[in-house]
Length: 325
Image (cartoon, rainbow, N blue to C red; front, side):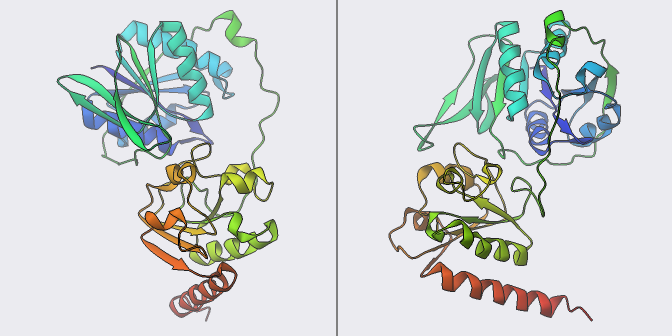
């Protein structure tokens, strides 16, 4: 099963989800190749080798400097055809969703998306996909080759194996229509602390906070714990907090070591995005809130009283362990 993993990168770093997919592919197949497309990206090949790539194809061109999908479709299509890859895997992001869809159309290939697992059964690749609002899981396959798959964000953790990859540069040949789009500007959101995708600790707020001004309680607790702040869809739809912090079915999937849900009822759409957390703590005044059904620790009470006291306790603990003088 010759497998190619598309590795997305930003700011000279390979993305966590891409590396997680690479590691899973190496676990299944062993001899896995990776594609890195961009400008001046050859230095990333060593990192790909450490996370499971036996061979890394480097496609460098100024037309690949901007994170536009169509030039990457050209590169990937040529590589799949010339090397006979029968499987192409992507960690799901906005960019890779476009690349995977374009590649599927170009190669007349089957694409399964939102997968949360991959396995081999009787020599065939089988994916697992949530259905019915993540209440059930179904096995999915492909009718032909090449097989394309988008893996849900946060599904596989990168595992460093310490290997060294063979590096091969590929000739970049782009279609005329692939160079028509130009990126005029790329904005980066300014934020403090870790992103919710990478944080070990997340404190999330819901409508139970009562208003946007009360997110200060969540922010202070997150700061004390050294974590990131997240929010539910209802909160971001109401304009209380940025969409970039949304966790759930239509937001981001996270898997921190600790997830503290403050004023969150626990609807299935939110559960989908955070059920992979190692420990879930819920604070809610409603003892019948659905979130208590899957929380490891539940606190029933007024969050406006509980959260400040919890923050104070954490700060006292921090001060005892890390005195200033």
